[in-house]
Image 1: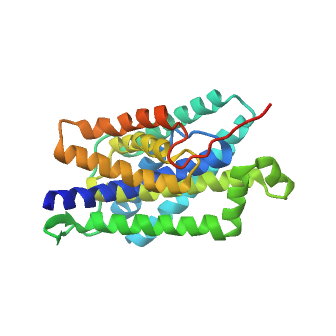
Image 2 (image 1 turned 180 degrees about the horizontal axis):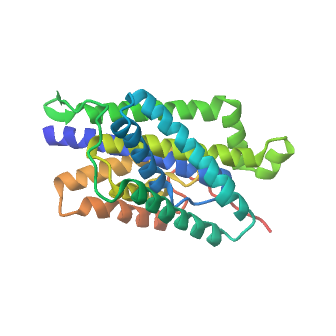
Length: 290
């Protein structure tokens, strides 16, 4: 029972952080129909910028995180303006290849600035172990769950209640109708990319606080794909629920079966979902009549 509780709490940690990264992925796809293969590199850059602000410059973690979010928002807007906006109207495969190239570019920039050696991350969340129902888990994982869920709740409120969030939902549903209502689609694209970069950066800082910072963090982005396929490429609630399911699935498989199956099973689930329900659990089926 103790093992089950520990695996559950650890899985919720991973799942909540995966949901943050998946949220940005879904936002970009919903607003612009672009599949962003560079989401893992946004997470990597966010972790390294936090490391630079807090560990190298010695800033207080609140200031360091605020600056990291600002840098990430700027990066998202820059990528949308200089890289993706010129690709409007181009074949979707061309846009996908651009995001793949962008992921390599961001990884190369991170390696050029900080090197390829993993670094000890300055822990801004205490890692003191605590006991919950007989299981032992670090406070950093519990705080990561709390922070991730608070942010996910805040973004859900933003999309449902704020003017900008409603505009983003309108663009996601029908770009032409949104244009006719006076909504700037280009501005919404910039919003989507900046929020995607910011959420990935916060997720990167949470992961780095637990495991350290290094180039392998970008692989975390690959784990986002089973999440968004499971939940649905265009579903924000699906990103949250899919992240929790995949996080728990990884931990239960690794804890009870081992042998590296926890790295494989999420992608097996991805294939199964694509075979049974290609739109995911919460994705919308689009029927086009010609």
